[in-house]
Image 1 (cartoon, rainbow, N blue to C red):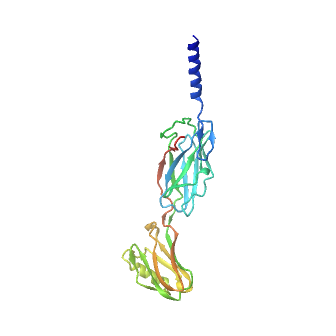
Image 2 (image 1 turned 90 degrees about the horizontal axis):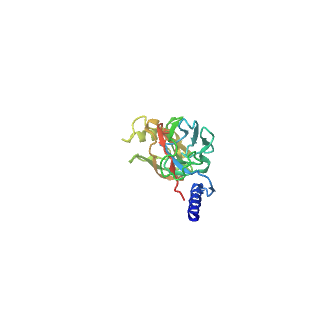
Image 3 (image 1 turned 120 degrees about the vertical axis):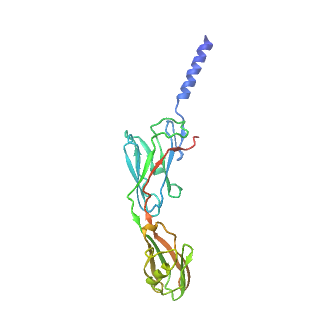
Length: 256
């Protein structure tokens, strides 16, 4: 009889121990004795420039939050939190600033309303839908500059593997444009050149229509006296954000 009672007590004790919530180690190093979890959802953007991305949950969560992407394609506003319709925090964007892949960003999931700490890959909530909004088409703009007035010499410009003839250090914008349009890889209207006089340390501005999207950077090969030339992209062309819906799924961190 004593052995039977001891066995029952032992079983009850083991059940109580099993029912206790596990201690979870979060990525920030903190721990909590409750059944919450961290995870990650990933989404991709293409040709990111400037604009707004809306994260919309399924209706039961009833909320829309927006992430602003700056001109460098990096996140600028991760301060808001996604909450479900009963006020529990589903996502905290203040703790994550990593770029996962080109145009890929991450947000973290915390304190899910699903208490299953043994989750191993099945989404714990309905997938989010990512919609790019405020999409604006933009012309590509590139700028050729020198660090001092050029006093002599010449330079060439290359695009998609083709090179112009030698261009004099004091050439004007109209003649630079004509030299580029003489290349077989560029048609009339596909590039315009404004401003510019390297002899006066004035930059040339190259504009490609938005229909060409994010074009390759021009390459300058300069043999100038008194100056060094360089070209930079000052405005990425094409759509600021790719206007399509992307479904993202919860992907948990490995449990300790």
